[in-house]
Figure 1 (cartoon, rainbow, N blue to C red):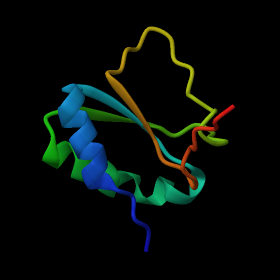
Figure 2 (figure 1 turned 30 degrees about the horizontal axis):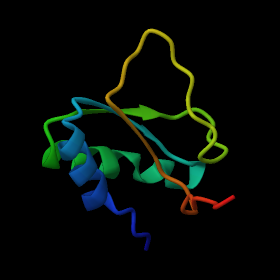
Figure 3 (figure 1 turned 90 degrees about the vertical axis):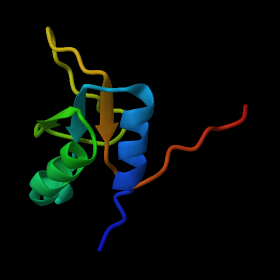
Figure 4 (figure 1 turned 135 degrees about the vertical axis):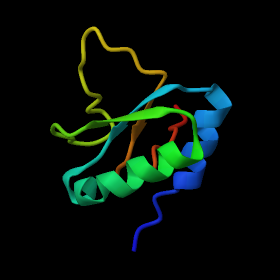
Length: 85
């Protein structure tokens, strides 16, 4: 139904050698959270954590103190486009 580009996520995790990965999902994808985590952990050696708090878009980066992640993966609806000024 959706192309979550999980292979692209796996490739990025491997490229940066991320051990701890935080995945942030919008409400509509939260029912797929277990499938997403299982897929990523199966294909990488990383541990995946889920942010299940609110998510209002790409600018809504979770705030967490004391925790360090090697990579934060945000799923959303649109690509970020670089604007030329």
